[in-house]
Image (cartoon, rainbow, N blue to C red; front, side, top):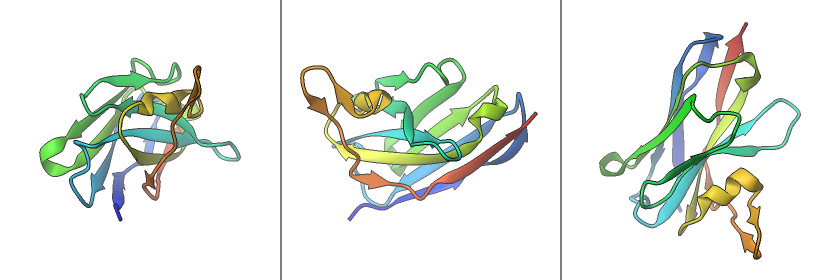
Length: 133
C-alpha cells in the first residue's frame, strides 16, 4: 500500500506564492505517473497538473503559466509550485498517483477519445489553500 503524505498549503494574499509537497512512502515514481487535483468548495475534484514517468508535464488552462509541477525521484517527492495566486485558487489540493502513463487524462476528467480511461490509485489527504483578495 502506497501512502502519499502532503505538506504545504496555507493562507496568502492574492499574487503570492505557495508550494505543496507530496512524499510517497515507497519508490513509485519510476512506475507511476502523478498529479495534483483541485477541489473548490462544493465542487468536484479536477486535475490541474500532471507529470509522467518521463518527466513531461501538462496543466489545465486555469493554472497554466502560474503553477509548476515537478518531482524529485531521489526523495520520492512531488511538488506543486503555485505563483500569482488568485482568490479563485482557494480550495483543497490533492496529490494523486496511478500506475503507468497517461495521467494527463486527469485534466479531462479521466477520459479521452478512443476509450482511454485513467483512474487514481492513490490519493493524498489534501492541503487547504486560501487566497485572500
